[in-house]
Length: 107
Length: 275
Image (cartoon, rainbow over all chains, first blue to last red; front, top):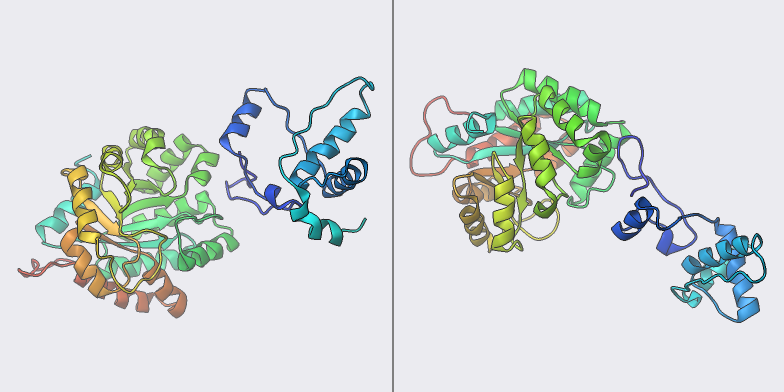
């Protein structure tokens, strides 16, 4: 599964998160998507930064910017669910590695 | 398969006591007509086979010279239909056997069956897909063979015997021996373990010819490689010559020296042989 043009050339990418700034996903994710077992979605750089700040202020946890994308989507999802609805988010990395990026982004 | 143009090329080279000379060009660098002019120059210089490269955005096997070459061709808008048109003109103008040299994604995106059919009708004789390992090569072999194209797979100094054997089983026309670890590019000498690598590849290849490439940059290196293998591939050094001179005449002169170096010592080549 690749970000590509109509001739099969790989396209340039952008993400505020270095770990997501890549034009392909691995075979396991491609398979899970293909069999319909996982729904994949997207959030913007700004939403990921907002989620980073929310988690820092409410829980004292700095999530990696990759994981902050998941927090951003969880926040969006939670707005449309009852209070009793439980959401499990995997924080796959720590955000101290991304502090320079967060600090240089406009709040 | 024995009636293929590649089969004829290697049989003729063997009878003339030389290795086949196999230059590489990126299709459309810097333009389709420039590639055709360079191919004609290589044909006049005594080349036997042309590897015509499909430019790709992420050429992981290539060093800086062929990366730049691919980038120039992509900037000129070259895609597979342009490669077919370039090949048709080379097929019409020269006697070179033509190998389609590509990374897999452009072929996969167009469809392997469609690519195979179109490559064959454009005049290609074989396909070499750089980034498909032998473990994943069954489709390439069956689909391109069905379109009457030879399939060439790669082995390297780090390939164990079982992997070399698998690559050889999937190959027809010839087996391509990567001379060294790392990417394509201009180098100063052949690796010390090249004789051993080629010997291992020959054991896997049986009667299939073996050609050696990656880093062969000078007539002296071509001469040494020609004593080991049935074919000698030169890419980056020729592309660099074209890049620097912008002149098919300069490329022809350089290629003539390489073609001459592919003759093995010990007996004069028959009258009328190329070069």
